[in-house]
Image (cartoon, rainbow, N blue to C red; front, side, top):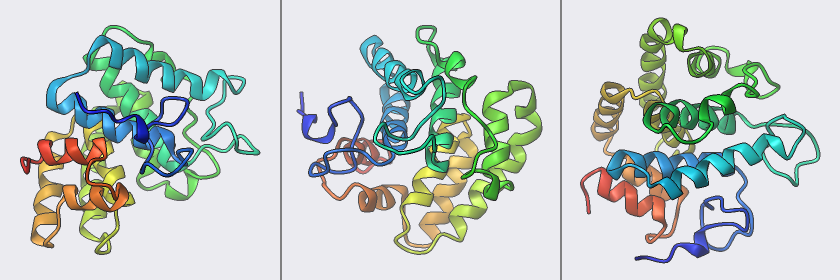
Length: 217
């Protein structure tokens, strides 16, 4: 079994590379890794427990409010983190009976200092994550916004590609995922290549999973 300990911080979060001590957007890196792993083979009970604990620690150690990092000086929660927590909680609550993923959605705030400026795409996505009854109404719009976002991404942009893939995995939007892949292919790019920019080391576990998932390994 491959040893990936150099890509994990002391708290158990996935890091974007082996040389950083901490992960600046830990939930986003966790989401990409665990959602890819879930797509490929599903998660073991130990892995479900790990991600359940990582999500819970994001708010239970901060007075019940989500916080990007323990070393942040305020109660900020980044836009990327909000999307990632929402995506993981929805997908894993549907796939696994163990864990408190539905419970973890309750303290997730929809309107924050970082999300309100993205009222046209992030806010609808978070509403769809928190309120299942709204999903059938919001999913067509969310799908269009994901595909549009990928179509206008500058060459080399990796953050936007990763977030839209996380969105698709989170709400099980398989058709949207395939359309985004097609759009990138027409641009001479791929999700695998986009993720390789964010995770620069070839043996990073997320890169390994991306190559496997996108049938290139």
